Length: 226
Image (cartoon, rainbow, N blue to C red):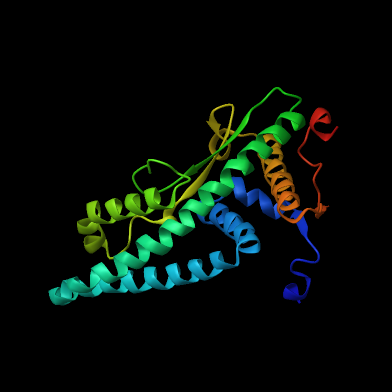
């Protein structure tokens, strides 16, 4: 089983399916970050689970309030869970994305022979925290976002801010890789992401992971293949 190899056999895999990291919506990129953080921080998986449960309960409450206004008093309880767990999730994601961006940028420069620049930017859905590396800053930002969007949340029955709406912006030469990147550029960006993930894993464990590459060369020109 996977758990039997956890912490013993570390591997990073690249396959054509991973092109979804660039081509698809934010949920795919959030999942990539969450999987990496879960391996490094056991508490992260628990916080993510607690946040998901709190989000589900808050959304259910938002849908019930129009039929029973007295239930509005319970919103504060679930807001507290969203703030506490959500702040922890967001700050760890932001901290992880800093070295991920650094490694991926350097790797992409090598792949493109220094002709192109890859940048990664963690994008919270809440008002920009004063310090993305500070837990309290994120919690205050989420608290502010919940208050400012409460009427909208009640109108649509959904929580509009929090780490479930965050994204990782991937840009090549300052333009969205998803919207403007060529097939080769998108593949190069994802390859740089996966190799950056491997570099961080090596830093955390002290041992280089096994890197498995499936169909890595297609859609890359001769210089990128080299």
